[in-house]
Image (tube, rainbow, N blue to C red; front, side, top):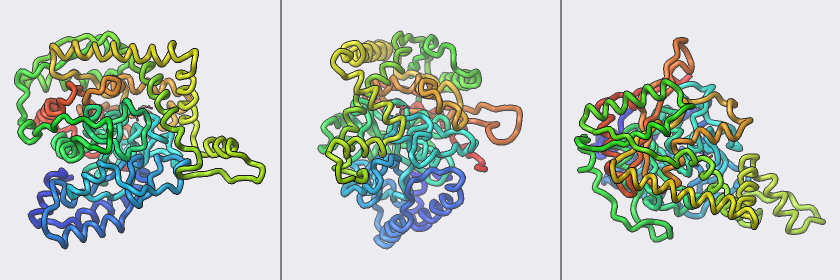
Length: 489
Ligand code: GLN
């Protein structure tokens, strides 16, 4: 598949049209959606209308002129249902666009649909979606990862060249890793969250799924930058990424936290990781051993903080303001209405997190859990600050294992949580981080699951997405893993 940059250029040059690009995307969705379940909603007519309008206007609208894009279904789109894959938002149609949606459309991108996710982005496999799971295109009996699984599937199976996800503890990078595509979580505050349904506000960040690091840079430059609608949005100027992606990694110092990789990482993952480091080093980067002594606490700290924030953020779904309301009986009071609405609307994982979060914030437990977690979060940030005095980037695998089987971890939430061991640190510290394809776990038996993608994760200094993207792009100039396509079936 063509990159988004090249497709937009071809449409601008008159070599193809926006309508043709959208039709190709819709055909592919029609063909593959029954086996992959990537989308909650496809907005074919609306996308075609917009494409016709772009073609008729003739003039270029911007760098994504006519390019189809899929949006995770937890970002508001005017007039298009936005469900967070939750029953509680059934029937909710936002009256406004998220800032990212607004900026993408201004740049000429055309939204073809809203993608599946774990309910309210809580999960690592899309199995917590009220609409059922998405399937990994490399093996449909396996999960694509989560929570932005639908967006990852849509790009990995080439239904669209671009999609947006949100990443609270790894939900862009983990599914990108498990599906063999590129996924970027920008620095906290870099991309406006206005119109993103909040999960954990000190961790949430929006970012792109793409085939190449170059396209990730393109989308990031469109959606990034200050937004007055988001009080946590940063005024830090956006970097010039055109000159940053020059293939040059000479002298770049890449930190290798060997002790943190420890046990529990599959051998093919470590093999691909070491090979990726060798590739970067052959291009001129220097590998430096580093220590992240508190990184091992990432999972408990993350699950204390994210559940605390979720319990507060999800209080707004009460049957009054949005979506689902329980059927009222004559004798029902307000309390029964709240209780039954929330009981019917939220799935088991969301309830578990609301309860856990309420518990860790309660008087008597706050100091022991929430406050302690915040203190360890500071220690973790200090680990990274110290490391970044000596290195420019830190490399780890994205996940400890390749894509796991659907159903394999659903009965044991802690096993599911452990999948995020390498991704949560970037959210707890706010740092930018990217996952890029770096190999395959191959098994000797042919057929489904015989080749499963492996991701390399690079993490950079705050607001230094330029270095992150430069290294990712340089790596992709030397390798072809990111260009491999799954044979769906
Ligand atoms: N898997 C993590 C969780 O379940 C991260 C989710 C996310 O980044 N939205 O919370």
